[in-house]
Amino acid sequence: MAINGRVEMAPVKCSEFLNELTNYLDGMLDARTKSELDDHLAWCHNCYVVCDTTRKTIEIYRDSELYELPDDLRTRLRSAIMSKCTASKKSPPPGS
Image 1 (cartoon, rainbow, N blue to C red):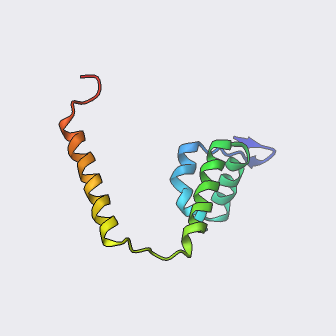
Image 2 (tube, rainbow, N blue to C red):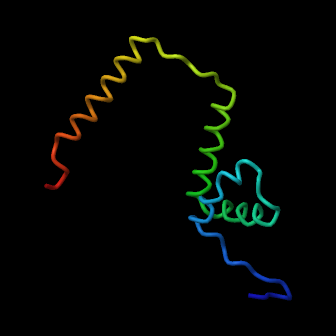
Image 3 (tube, rainbow, N blue to C red):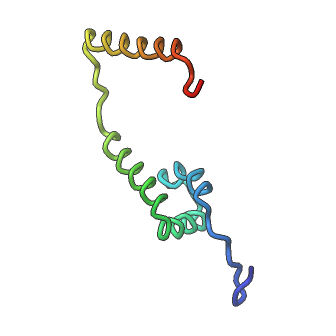
């Protein structure tokens, strides 16, 4: 839609924002797309929270080092996960 000689773009939908979230956070967008997503974040609280939380999570873990689990903990953890998986396969689906 043209307003005063300029084209008015439809607002970005949440699904469109989420599809571009990685590119947005990585700074891989052209200026127009980034501006459209910035406008969306200015009014959409849910997408703002998702974006902010994702950004903060990346910052926290960006410089962290991998931590090698002790063998006994790794064995117990794997055993617990396998037990849960086996139990869920044996139990009937909910509602049946």
